[in-house]
Length: 77
Image 1 (spheres, helix red, strand yellow):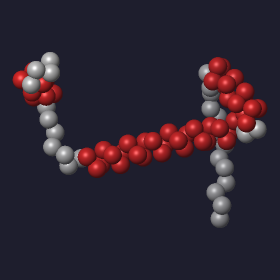
Image 2 (cartoon, rainbow, N blue to C red):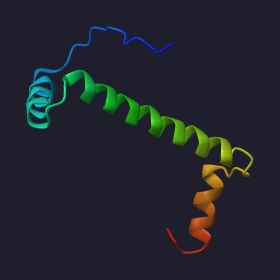
Image 3 (cartoon, rainbow, N blue to C red):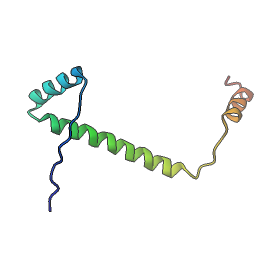
């Protein structure tokens, strides 16, 4: 069974809403289509970030003070 679109109320900053209306008219796409695409892109980026964090979770950490001390020792600061 196909998912049925859900309705939600979203309040936009007036300038953002105006830009959406203009882009909608220019691209012949609905504001809903534009917003859904933007949200999907944001969620996809979040998923990529989470995957990168998980991939690096086992890497050894370094304390900030140690990093600064090492940079000073190597003449980088």
